[in-house]
Every structure is written in C-alpha cells, then in structure tokens.
Amino acid sequence: MACLAASLALTPATRAAADGGDVVGGLIAGIIGGAILNEASKGRQHRTGQHRTYADPATVAQNREVQTSLNYFGFPVGAVDGVLGSRSRTAISEYQATMGYPVTGRLQPYERDFLTGSYRRAIAGGPATAQMIAGDPMGPRGLLRTYQKQAAGIAPPPVAQPVPNTTVVIAPAAPAPAPVPATIPVMNAARDPGPGVTGLPNFLGSGTGKSLASHCNKVSLLTSTNGGFVTSAAMTDPSVALNEQFCLARTYAIASGEDMAGRVSTLSQDQIAAQCDRLGPLLKPYVSALSFRPRAEVMSDLGGFVQGSGMSPEQLTGTARICLSVGYRTDNMDVALGSALLLNVLGEDVYGELLGHHLSQGFGTATRADLALDWYDAGLDAVARGAAPVFAPGQPERSDLIRKAAYRIGGRGDGTAFAAPAPAVPGQAAMPALPAFSVAD
Picture (cartoon, rainbow, N blue to C red):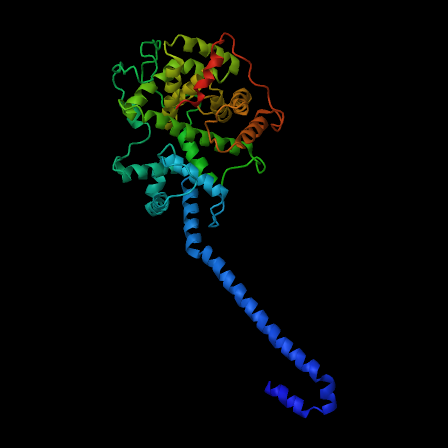
C-alpha cells in the first residue's frame, strides 16, 4: 500500500484521474481474491485433515497386519492394502468358521489379536513352524487350530505331536472293538468284512499312494503366494483351479465332520477314527471300481451294500460325514472315498464333486479325467437344482469354475455346454427320498 501511495503521488493528475480507479480496483480485487483463496485453501486443508483423521495410519497398519495374517494362514484376501473390503470380509468369515467363532465377517478384538499374534508366533518359529505346517493335514489353518488348542490347555506342545496317522495306526490293536452305544452312528459291526481284510490298515490309500494332505499343504502355500484363488475369468491352467477347489472342499469336509464328531461325547477322537477304519475294507471293492467303471454302475452296485447294511439312512449319513472327515484328516483315501460314495448313493449328490476331484487328480484312484466328469456333473447339477452346497457355500461362482476346468481336462470343450444330470440308478427307487438328509446337522 505504501508503494501504491508513492506511485499515485508521482503519477500526473490527468493520468490518475483516468486510470487510478482501474489500478486501485485491480489491486484491491487481487488482495481480496487472494484472501478468499487462502481461506478456501485453509478450509480444504481442514476438511482434508479431518478425512485423514478418519482413515488414520494406525487403522490402516492394523488392517494390513490382519490381511497379511489371513493370507499366511490360508484365508486369501489378495493384495494387502489396509482396506477390509469384500474379499477380506469373506476371508474373515472363513477364519471365524475354522476357529469356531460366530461368522460375522467382522473381527472382534480378541479374534483379531489371536490372529495377528499367531502370525507373529509362526514367523518367529522359523523352520519349526514349517515342519508343523507340513505335518498337519489342514496346513496353515491346522497350525492356527493347534495354537488355539494350546492356548486352551488341551493340546501337547508341538514337539510332542505325533507324525500324522501314527496314533490311528497303533490305537486299534484289538481285532474286535468293544460294542458302541446305539446312539452313536457307526457302521454295522456285525457285517463280515470278508477274507483278507483284517490285517494292518493302509493309510496311504490305493492308486499311486500320494499323500493328499501334503499335496494340499503345497497348494495352500501356492494360493497364498499367488494372492488368492484362481477365478474363472483368469484361469490359464485348469489343473491348478481344480487342485485349489479340491483342497478347499477337503477343508470344509474335515471341519464339518469334526463338528459332528465333537457332539459324540462317549468316544474319543482316536476311538472314532478306529471305528471309521473299519469302513475302508468294507467299501474297498466299490472304491476300486471308481477307476474303471462309470458312475451309474458303481452307484448301482453300492446300493446293494446299503440295503444290506442293517442301518437306517440317518445312521449311514451321519457315519459317512464323520468318517469322510476322518479319512481326509488321517490321509486314508479308502475311508474318505468310501464315505463320499455312501453319501452319493444315499442321495447326497453334492458330494459327487469330491469323487470327480479324486478321479481328476488321481488321489486314491487312477487318474481318469473322463470318468470324473459324470461325478462332477452330479455334484454341480445338484447345487444348480437347489441342494444346499456343503463346500464354500458363500462362493456360488465356484461351480462354473469347476465345470469349466473339469471339461477342459476331460475333453468336453470349455464347459459352456453343461452335461445332463446323471440318470437314475436302476433298482434304487427309494433313494430319491433321501436328499432331505442333506441339511441335517
């Protein structure tokens, strides 16, 4: 303003009269405009500061640790960005279901603290942690369950944990187990298993003897490394997609069966496993037939076994679900496959997906991608008709992914032309009434 006054004093009067108003008006307008802009800028800075306070760095860092922990333990969230979006909520729900927490998709403080604390403990464990993961049928998720049991004081230290299958092999020493209470759904003890089946059990299953538990541990690590499961749109290798979905279904089968077995208060876990071991030899002929006979023939033959078992459909269904979990947990493919077959012949067609996976990947059977297709179709068509999905029920898109991948491997194109539902099994007129048991327990 001093400079302005000086310039006005030195300017001729006539020029001042002509231009003074414009100059002063322009300068004043500039000063006022600058003040307005400054105030607006301050307002924006204030509002922006308020936004940064809402998404504060501490919350973002906490969310990133949660996402990192979920990825590590086999609950993939994808990229770690500190934002708990839909994929993170789905992973949180799976974590809660695995740990027995209420499934809400939102972590309670104690759920979050246990998750992130377990992650830090696992990282600090180094090679010992890797050994525990490799030795647990559920892989990283099993490690989390182990930590939970140790925190509750009901599990031994990691160093005292037996090698998988060891306990099951040595526990049932007696050839004739004690009678089981009638309320416990187990296979009929009076049925003669036939000659040559009373020897030591084969916990590696049939076929190539590959360990499904070890395979799924590797698949889980690869899925976490790749940032999540393969999607139908991004699928380049159908075998990778089927492996992921196979191991995901196996995890759900283990968890569901363990939940049912937990309600059997009169038997220990080892006693239940010993009872389920008897199922493998009984169903071995039907399991072997999977590798060379079509689905309809296997189902027809197994129907005769069910009718002669002396057990009600409810008992057989409960037995099969529990023993399916035991078979996968102990890596006994005969028990797992036999249980899945029983569920299918009892009308639980959704379990056909498991048999398709076994035949497609060659675990407990020969690798027969062609025979796998009818089993896949039976399971996926059942879900399409409205049957309750038993594997990853919150992911309806997986049906299209499995069908697309299975069809490519089995030589039926890209999976866009769905196969017709499997024909009715001859001689099984009473079986269609049994799907009502699919939502039990």
